[in-house]
Image (cartoon, rainbow, N blue to C red):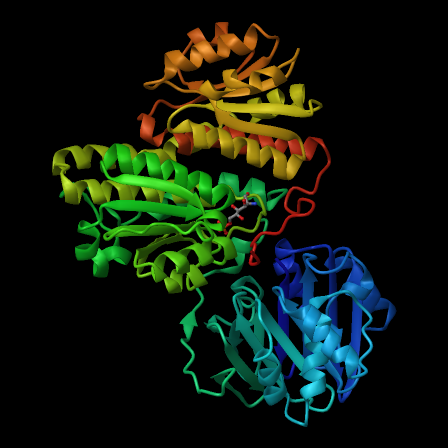
Length: 609
Ligand code: M6R
């Protein structure tokens, strides 16, 4: 949801800014721009399209030579995708340039106020309003003007600001949208996430809400918008460059699907105590006493993370026998939720920055819930605002379509359910058996990936079809939802996911001759019922693609296509069953000629409500 980068130091800023933008392009990619201070002269290049278009513009302009600059890659909120709406935006009075991720909610009132003062706007954006406001309040001190402006603003922002009259200062600030400062030797790289920093330094600190950092080549100072000094929490970035490069794969999504066996081993490493038959989750240690009192879990998330959370609901009820329910963060927050004593709210999120999930978490905390995070990005907002949590450890996920984060989330939620079960009633022996089953999963994902060629062949046969159904029951109802979401978001094929039994209550009317219907039909408690649902589809002309358990030959007589997954316990089956669905979506997008890693209209991290 927009990526911002800033640099101040002794190196020429432009190549660093462009490289940073390319790393952040997954966050938004409808337009981009760069502003650099050359002495006291502000130079700006902006273009609709990808970062490459801005690079071309910079070439035409002969490049920018300055050592202080800011840059932005956009996912449009206010105003269409036009060059006038591209960032950086500047004011018309004080030589201010600004890049922004987030939404200024009171922009209309501020714009009217500024227009009355004679300012003339050249874009439709909320960001230009903020640039003008800072310019209006500027009296020779950029930091002071930024703080004064931010005190007038409601909404979310991560901003980087520079000023022609102060060629040794970069001011950055955050509320609601992520931002971190990388600290090198005599230089600083500011970015929406670590991927744009790691090539330059591994020392960084994230900004908290309402923090402002004034950075010069000699050092930096952090304070709140109300001028209260703040000590930044310096951290060591653990990412390495290899993790955010394609490494021989055609797309990040493909790379991330294939990484799953390896990263799931990392997710499990050190957390399964086979001897004692228990799960060790260090992130929950300080909270163990509270957790034992838990009577109800509410899992909150959006998108793919919500599907993982739905599986978490089944796991907590089935394995730990504890009441659990799932809520879209966006709905939970606004429906006056009842939080009784000993309720645990679990926010599930890859990025840890999803505004809907974060707001739901805050709402739950305000109402007295204990808060846990199941998050991938270390130090993200959700990770910092929860009482305790478990990191996914699946490494950076660059592809906009979430894949390895999903299997990582389900793996962590399985461990959480076993952790709770063991503390409530489960014997070490039973738990040890579950841990052995869980430990075998990465190897089984590896085996599942061997069917990639076959998945591609099946996808080729149906890729021209514009409407698909994904059906599953029990643990694999959420998997069906996830399969449909994957197909929709990167191949732009209309797909619906639903419980297999629900089909006959209406959606069956959609089935016509040759419609692809994907069933997750692994062996389990509801296998026979799923077989009946398959028969219902077949008798209406639908083409059944079944994800089935290795060795199930019966299914071949009812399904046109069968994609096998290794045998496993039912509660673990979503981690395997989702893999052919991820591959199917990937191949469909490639076959249809789409940009797999940057699907239209989407952004990786949705930091606005
Ligand atoms: O970062 P999060 O896991 O909180 O993101 C939640 C959703 O925005 C995300 O899963 C989205 O649905 C992806 N595009 C799915 O592939």
